[in-house]
Image (tube, rainbow, N blue to C red; front, side, top):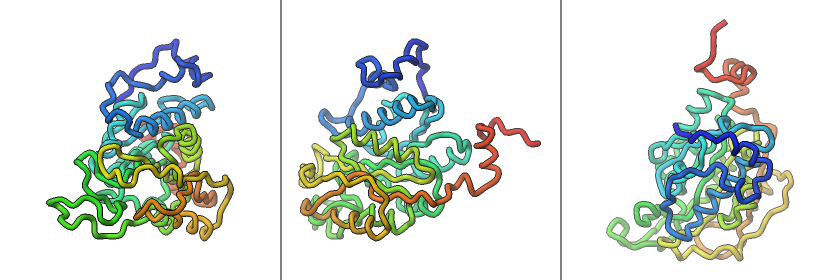
Length: 302
């Protein structure tokens, strides 16, 4: 866990996060080591602004905690000044679930990559809709394992990256994570464009207000590996913010098949089901902790 103490004179700057001094809030002193021009910078800015907006509405910095996986995305752990935990590869979700069980009052943000979440972490992802813990998963999706020099992930397009590991390139058709999320009963599903950090901030904020498990996929380019899928911005369009049936959401999720740059890529909230009961509302001990606004560490048996 880590968080740098906030100087008292910084607190008042939250009132207007668009001021130049306010935009520095929640940054750390750690040097950013992403490649210059990497869309991870924009994803970080979107996440940071979402937290700032929620703080303007009454949440405190100590209410937030992040859990990051392993990959280029995982460096975000060092750059946003809130408490956090850097988990093992593919294990960000169960680690975050443990945090939520320990204190259901925390606003838990989970950062993962498409390799991290859909390869090693797939067995955890497919159960999130069933358990429905009240936390937000943000997946940095560039369709490749970029930190380890560009191997294919389960959503990499066919024909990519002939190598010693895959001498014929990627021969398997990519999966569609949004359709999988729908089929596994996840109640909040959204997609963003990494370059549009204002829209990303809006979507992440709405995801974190959702009472249950929220999944936000952020489409991003990698400027080094799998550049064949880059430049999809012209195919992206924002969907109307409205309630959709399962079938309507499935139709939207099917528009982009991850195997080519053809077809439209809808961004925004694809599906939201507000009728689902969150995990921490199913168990009386967790409900009691929420009512008392404490975690197990401060719990006293009566």
